[in-house]
Image 1 (spheres, rainbow, N blue to C red):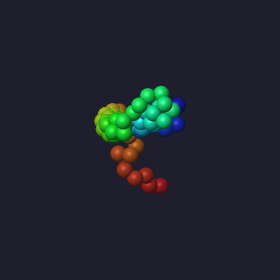
Image 2: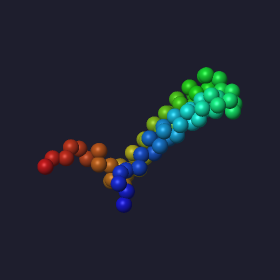
Image 3: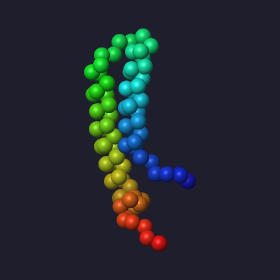
Length: 76
């Protein structure tokens, strides 16, 4: 049993920011030369893909009936 819901948007966002970190680390280590403006499209594109993945994941959860955030506040 899962301890929490799978959030694909957070996964994609984290991978894009990690890819930007790898690009800068490779540049700092001398493995390759990365211009400063390359990381902007990587991060922004990753965040856009994360938004799309989040919307798709939310739609799938609502269709299955497993989205607890759409049910409203819990009382009692």
